[in-house]
Length: 337
Image 1 (cartoon, rainbow, N blue to C red):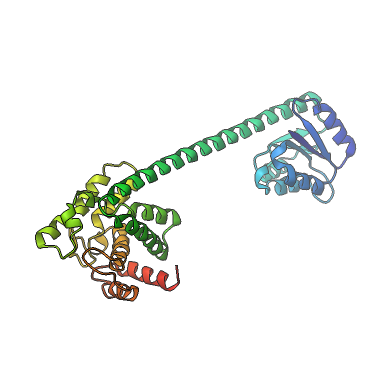
Image 2 (image 1 turned 180 degrees about the vertical axis):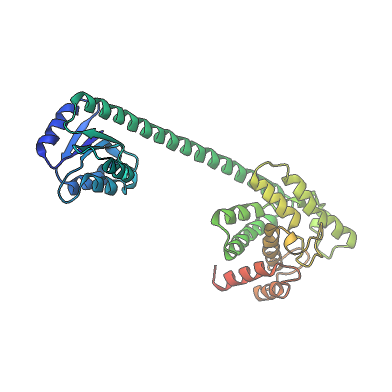
């Protein structure tokens, strides 16, 4: 650990250096020019344990040196001792305001200097140790968070694999919907972290369909009113499956499962929510889900062209879909996102 000494008188530097040179772990670096001392601080700030600066120096006095040194981010908390033969309260106040930690008077006492420098070195080392501990804890928290996120993704994939056993198209559908959800989220200006969570959670929007009988789920023709009612239960059943999870991802997925078939005009299901009473996540997924369903071939219909599907989305803004979500979707599509 360096002890930086700055005094324009070489003899004073030599005397100070001799007093503290044999302190444990201490390497003295002396300067007579404040500009050279500042350059050293910029290149070695994290390795300096204490700085000792004279006050009266030509060109740049000690207060100006301290003020400049404190502007270096990694040097903001390193102890700085001001050495001066002047005993003026105004000077001390100015030095403290600039960032001085302690003062030494000239002529200095060797025992006092050793004790103060030794104590300040120990104080700075304790600060660095605390920073290392905080950095270690931060790494541990990030690693644990990443592990939890990985396990959540694994659970999502397992749920999707289970759904694929019922309907081979499900896996491709949810992947496309997830991409479209991210596109709409970015078009709405949502933070990237929120976009990623929405995209992942949206992959579980139809998980409730695992409870729908094959005869209904895979029926090649139109559903009867009774069959349609049975199919619509997948929204509520999906919510029940997912809301048991305590993580924010599962809670978001449960919200999406329950609300992605609600309509902006209040004629959707299962609750008939209207307008902004429908959670934003449900409104976003509604656009993505319908667009992909229209442009995909299903047992009961042929795929629409992209132009036909886009026109349907545009025409049904403010009735089926949130107009803001439609605008974001169409704008991002036009931009090639």
